[in-house]
Length: 280
Image (cartoon, rainbow, N blue to C red; front, side, top):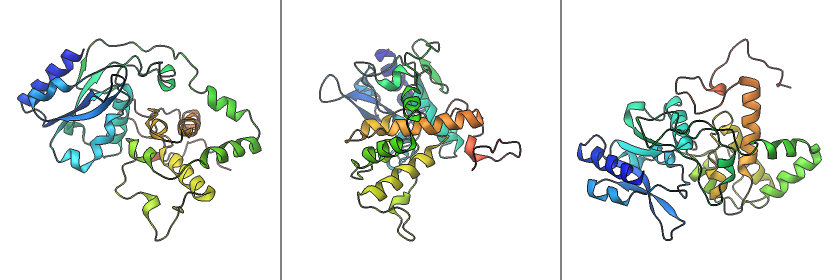
């Protein structure tokens, strides 16, 4: 598959269908890869594809410095493609402005990452061409909501204590925001001080406000790529919080984000027939 990826990347650049190919290249050691930006056909040989291609490359599609290079092609596995679907739905990207080289993915990491053990989207839902064989949807190896159900089974006080303990480790580096393909605001709410909605210092009150509002902003949008938690130097269980809200959105609106570019996002529309029982 690596040869096919390199060949198509070189062809797209040679034919000037795209100006840059966003993909993966070998990192500092065998178990590491890093994002790369290929602008010359002869450099396409740097591209790799293996079980260590964790990064969600869709995060670069809203970066000014990347888009200034010209029309991009992007190597996209299932979760990358789902993020691209959301970006198009939210008018952050035009479909014709990106060429998607889809790659079917059986999971990343060694051992297999937890997010992949619970994943059912092995083949990109949106791509211009699929490199390699399509992988039919498989039953998740793990229950994707196992941790959510376990936490829901605890008392309110126990849940509050759990999240206080998680958030107290945060020192507000914002790595979660930078890694997330759907955190694309030019100016984040934490950087606004007139009025200042969220305290910027790393203490309990400010940390709680930051993580709760970020989770709210991702409700009905998070595609479960897990990059926020992987980027967190303190190992805060950010995906657990996002999964909880995703569970509620699916239950109340029957919506799973990132699967259909024509679908109307759950929290971007109002219908009189919407069930409002969850509003207290």
